[in-house]
Image 1 (spheres, rainbow, N blue to C red):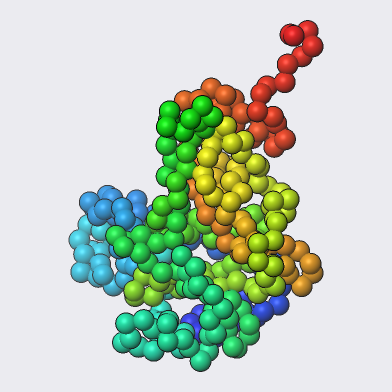
Image 2: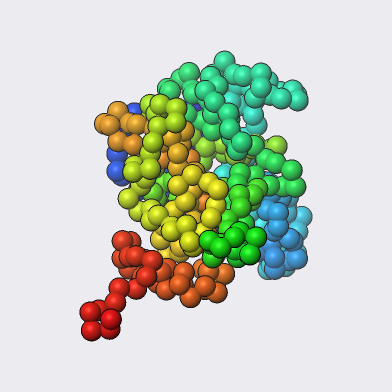
Length: 316
């Protein structure tokens, strides 16, 4: 099947819930895209091209290196990496989605083919008049940033007597952070999500299967994905809803903001995540606190592990 806006093959051709095979294919697509972007960044560094922020790499056109590709092996490697990434993340103009061209706020004008259903800090969401699929347009921010992630720092005396081992502050993210977030949504049994394209302006377009929104302010504290582990407040303070730890893809991740607005109910009654805020968990920084370091080692093996190591009766 083809996406009605880009004309390219799609794994989510309509509003119906996909089967497990499609979800597996979506996960594979996210992983291959992340690998292709990492390959592009590594090839760029070999020729002295910076990758922080990574917006220039993300929007690198295939033909940008046409004159240099044959200059030597390293430039040829970069050209091949750029082509491989563009094949998975094509650049498509906003006009293809029905938005007006040459307008200072094209999505603000709306589209006859996409009906706006909401806007947030990171993205604007629209529903396709064609098949009901939800399209999300993640908007670039200042300084080449997009989306969000977390910065971590040790707790300080200013936090008081109950100072946590770590503080997590939400901040602007990178394009890689956004790709990782959409991959995590898929891995945490969230709503099936497919990256469709990037636009020349740096907008990332993704689509999801639709679902029914929860009531405003609904309590979802006991409805978090089963893979997420609550983090004791003595270890981390984030000032974000539902801070959690997850071990995914061989790494520890910090995940938050899975509140009522970021969950929907599917036709079969399941609750599924449609958005979150995440970052790799700072394991090296956390190792500076012996209690947190010990808890991380135990909770990786047993998600129900307590803050303190259990003591045997003969040790008391």
